[in-house]
Amino acid sequence: MAEETAALLESKFGGNQGAEKHTDEPEEYLNTNQVCELLGVCKMTLCRYKRSGYLVPVMLGGRCRYRKSDIEQLLKKGGTK
Image 1 (cartoon, rainbow, N blue to C red):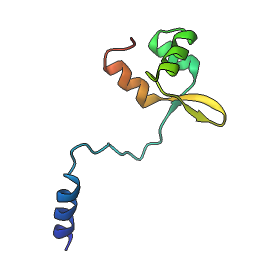
Image 2 (spheres, rainbow, N blue to C red; image 1 turned 120 degrees about the vertical axis):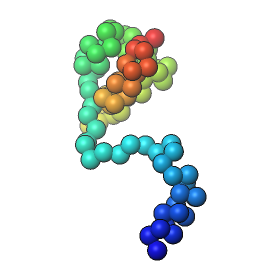
Image 3 (spheres, one colour; image 1 turned 135 degrees about the vertical axis):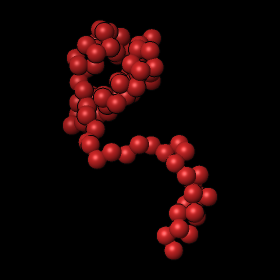
Image 4 (tube, helix red, strand yellow; image 1 turned 30 degrees about the vertical axis):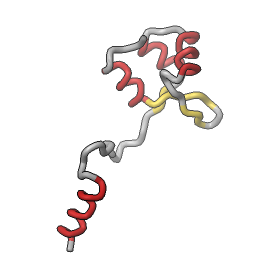
């Protein structure tokens, strides 16, 4: 029965391709100052990234935060613009 279910899921969703990595670790969030320091940009540049959609913040408790994973991914791609 388990093999049939696995085969059905694989045929329906294509196996692991395109699947996001899920970990038990909670997401870390960084404030504006931390992101500016990591990226080596000023607050105005970070504000431009936010307005253009280049870097999308998350509002937590009425405060603007950035996912650490998003910043790490941006740095892996070659840094800032």
